[in-house]
Length: 51
Image (cartoon, rainbow, N blue to C red; front, side, top):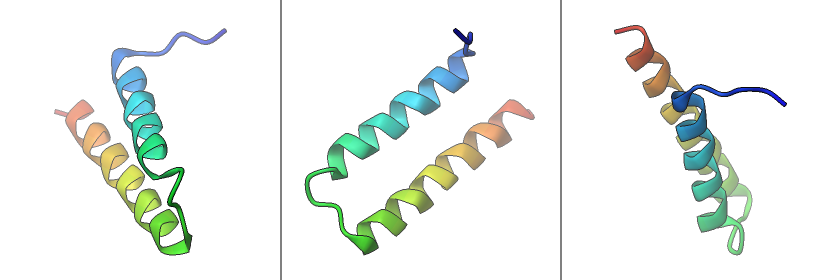
């Protein structure tokens, strides 16, 4: 079992929340938007870690 930092746990929870919101109505355009959101969240968290 791996130990995750609080930031990694928060990122994982945000991703799971996005997936739950979109799972029932997902289509190709939604999929691309969700990937873009995941990347934005990841980049924000990465930028905040560097501060």
